Image (cartoon, rainbow, N blue to C red; front, side, top):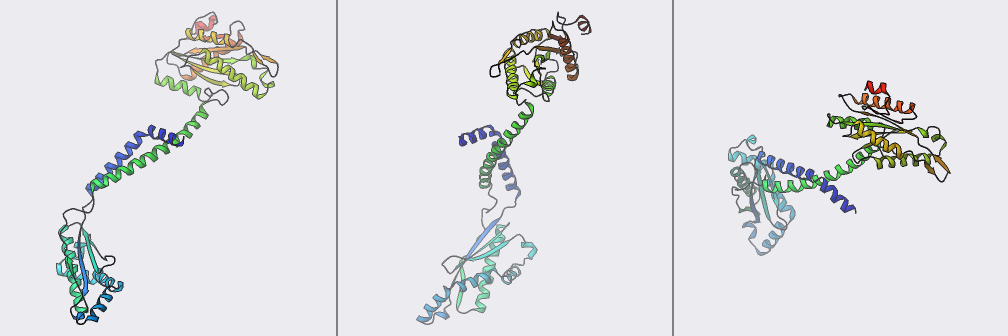
Length: 379
């Protein structure tokens, strides 16, 4: 289940994975072509007993035992790495330290051998080869002056390299692509994990926790957003008030109150269309938004809602019958009025519905038997 969930996260965030991989690839290629190529030349040397130390048989054995000592071969590596040898090398090549500031060198002993390997790295293939060979010559010259027992000599001289060791655009691009895919996958998962709690947080503030419809705080924003998307759309809002609960709701247990509200929500959903919006206005009333619905069409829907809410609700566990006694006021959006003006007209319509016991439905924007003549003329 966990693996399937992660695959779903990766599938939803595929664009983020591709984008991250492409950015990593582009950055790798960009920097690869910006970086100055580096070349490396390598020279190898062998340390052997001198001809003077090999005068007798026992001396030969002792000489090879001594040369095999780690301290002896390491000493020659240190000599090759010394500043003195490097200074003599630059003097021989007639180079200033500033000219070779981008070059590095390192001598190392190959394991279990009496062979040293000297590597020089820098931006010019000819200079790295010349430095490697010159450092070797200076080391040989210096060791010949101070030691007659061992001889260090070239095994292989350095040659100018033809290919740089760095950058390697294709290799770097491949590595960057792999890391980009991994980073993109991680970002996609993190994005989903952050989005889910954020969506839950938003939903908690958008929805009424008891009925699951829009909260009174969010409903006006939903109307405003709908109006912003379709400024020329004809729609109607309505306020449905459960007047019959006014005197009984406080005496009912909380669970019963919530059951009634959920039952009313179900009745509203049954009478409305899929694109209609329901909100909970306050403890005793709901608010509706009917897109693409004129005042006259909304009036017919409100009549069906009033009829559905006219059936008393039986609270069997308490042996109580509750009459909802609903009143409905509505208003059609027109003449580019503001959302606050639209809500005020719906509130005014609801006030008229409360006053007229014979006509529990009023919709601003139409002339109907349910609308007082003075209100119709004002509309």
